[in-house]
Length: 171
Image 1 (tube, one colour):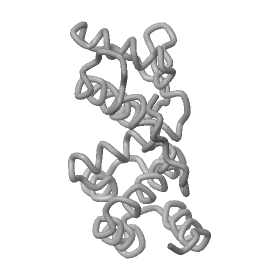
Image 2: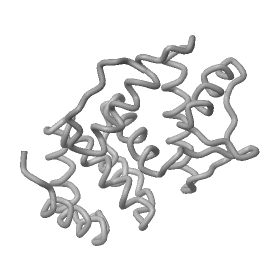
Image 3: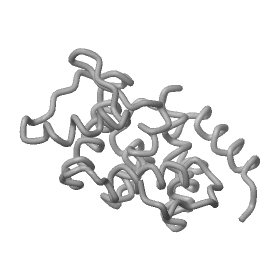
């Protein structure tokens, strides 16, 4: 790991940014960083689509080195033919990072695709909003407005957002 580690972590996003920097961007192992990122994004999307934290996992054999690296770094845990992230918040982080990279909005996808808005989605929505707040204020404001005023987002997600906003420290 690099000797230039940050010392000012103010959020879980900051911590995961550092983990990403250390294990992906500055990886000392001979891996293809784009392939490693693709594996993480693909797993996060599979978790989202299958609505389970341990979906069946198969990756292209050309990605074997990167997949083994992510497993060896304990970013991904493989259990037989299934995989998951080491913690649900890592899934949320990777998912949020994917949406930012693709310049997409989870909230707009929820509205358009009429995706399930159950309890499973609360932590993911909360993390995506936190990530947007830190990385893309404009998208954050659009999504907050959509959650609160579209009339198409379930009440428990609206309440989660209001609670989260009321309990955030101001910057």
